[in-house]
Length: 251
Image 1 (spheres, rainbow, N blue to C red):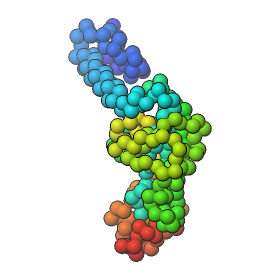
Image 2: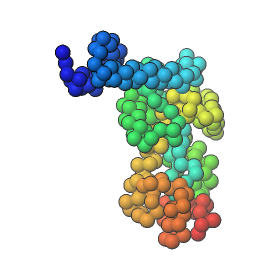
Image 3: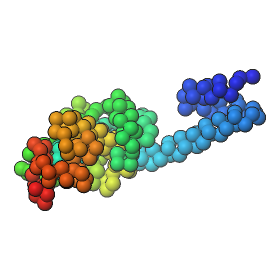
Image 4: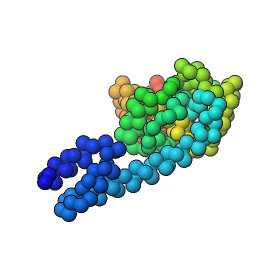
């Protein structure tokens, strides 16, 4: 008979697809330690099934329009911060993708976003990233700068999509048909994937800015107007990556 520690290691080493067989195999083992392990993994299996059902709901728009061909999810991050660029992302997921846990990037932990970023970049048919600088935002306003970032993201796709699934907006001057979806990053897997890639891309940039422009806390606040950030702005004045049109109340 295997020791409980060995059984625990066996479960830990198993893939998600093997959990059900392992639970069935040890169901008759009456040792409380074994039953505790089986119970833990049965709960994980239940949560996995719930997640698969949730992701199926996140594919409602993808299923509705899949007959058209390649579908591209588009989202942006960074419209609200006082500093840094606005970043847009366009993602085309494969029809047979099997990525779980896609969601509005704000609902995920930083660690989960980083994990999913790697999976999306590996499995996506195409990914395009665009951005507009703080200076460009000041020059043409945040909405127009966001559109420019989205145009750039679309232009960088190596495959031309037949339809764009957008988070809430209709992008002007785009010939590809579009479907704007309110709160799309929580309703469409493609838009959620775009929101995650955009968020991770921008967050990484702000962490790098924090190294060359210390004092504002960019690594933690990512340029948003936290109380510490505003205090630093008043103390040190604006940095080269601050949006002049956003900080008139503070400096």
